[in-house]
Image (cartoon, rainbow, N blue to C red; front, side):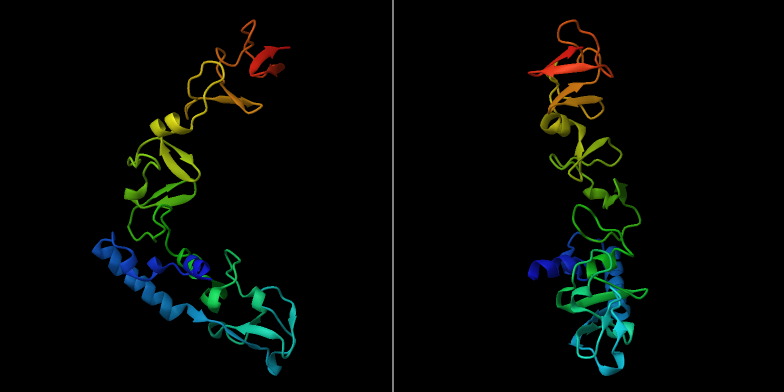
Length: 235
């Protein structure tokens, strides 16, 4: 429960004490953002039997009928509507809402995390909301400017070339020394900018000098071939 609560209600989304690196203007924006969400969107569902006047009403999520006396959940910010307890979940991630705590937006309920992300991007590195005017966007994710760094050496990568590794940026030097596959022919790492051919779990540079017949040196890219014990042969 505690882990799910931290995931759904990140403390850094509402309390500046969990964001020690924020500048004063960012702190001011966070306070205003948090206050507005509490006033306009935050609520806690009420678990109760479906009352008589709501007999036969559809569950707000799945649409199945709820009868008088059935266990249900109501949300005061959304009027006289009910959910099955298992249906009272975040519209975005579909996780059931811990302690029935929800945020509403446009008639839908969200966990705190995904409600906040409707209005502010979240840094893929520190997991805090971004209140700066500028941020870095790459591979569908966003970072604070100062947090877009190599996952290994922490070199800043703003304006630099990089390779994504498990959703995190890696500088070319670290990628080639730590993660690049060695070419089966020449033994050199296959860099991020190099074309690669993979076969039977082995890797080659796609260039003719490497991906070629072991006997006659005929280039094999796009050609019929056989692979025996890590060696390539033309057909």
